[in-house]
Each structure stands twice: as structure tokens, then as C-alpha cells.
Length: 165
Image 1 (spheres, helix red, strand yellow):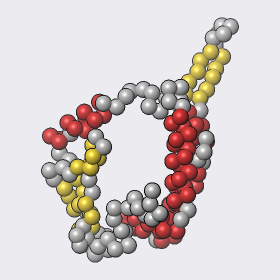
Image 2 (cartoon, one colour; image 1 turned 45 degrees about the horizontal axis):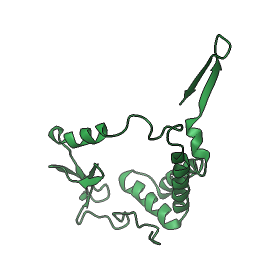
Image 3 (spheres, one colour; image 1 turned 180 degrees about the vertical axis):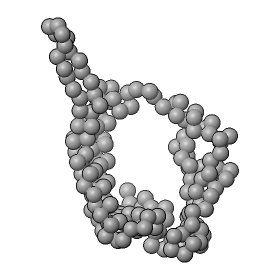
Image 4 (cartoon, helix red, strand yellow; image 1 turned 60 degrees about the horizontal axis):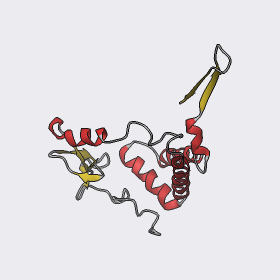
């Protein structure tokens, strides 16, 4: 694991100026791929090309459909079939929050928001902070509360209705 807090970043929002524009990709079957066509997103600051984004055509959708069809219909996040996922997601949330507490990562996402939305630095930073605070609620084993459920008594002895959201 890298000591660079921005090792995940594939662009620098502080120097992003369209020369050349940053290239976005589709993710299908775990691979980053380019479609036949892309479109440019204009830089709101200077009007030049800032991003080149996929413009996937209907005749290119089969790999996406096949990938979706290969996903299990149940069990992947089911608390009864895969309970270790909750602790794993709690650890992921903890690492994410720790990263969002570093100045470099907070500044990175603040600038990313500013590059695509007309917000002041304070407004954009507020978005990052409130998102971090939201994710803090799911650190540790608290993520299991996403599977909170209900239990209602039935009409007969021993009858009960249970459900999960």
C-alpha cells in the first residue's frame, strides 16, 4: 500500500486544463475499456476540453449485460449468507474516513467538485465534510445496521412476520 494519500487519483484537479483532456473509461468485467465513441466535457473556466468521457452506443451494451447477468442474484450482501461482508465494509469505511480526514484528500475532492459544479471553496469543502461525516456512521460494525429489520406478531401462536430493508 502506498504512503501517498492520493495514490488512487488518475488526474490532478488543480492542474486539469484540457491539455490533453483527462480520459474517462467504462468499467466492464473488471476492466477499464474505451467505447467506439467519446464526447468532450468543456472546462467551465476556459471553455476548452477538460474531459473525454465514454459515449457508449447500444450495439456495445452486450458485455455490460453479460457482466450483470453473471452477478449472483442473492447472497453477496445477504447478512445470513455472507456475514463477514459487514465487517469488511466497516473496515473499508474506516479507511475511507481516515483518508478523507487528511488535508490532501479533502483538498482533492473539494477541487474535483469545484471543477464540475459552480460552488465556492467553502461550499465544495462542505460537501466533502458532510459526506465524510455520513460515512463515519458506517465505520466498525455499525454498517450492519443497514440490514435493520422488523418483526411483527402474527394472528396465531408462534406466527411472526420478519423483514429486512
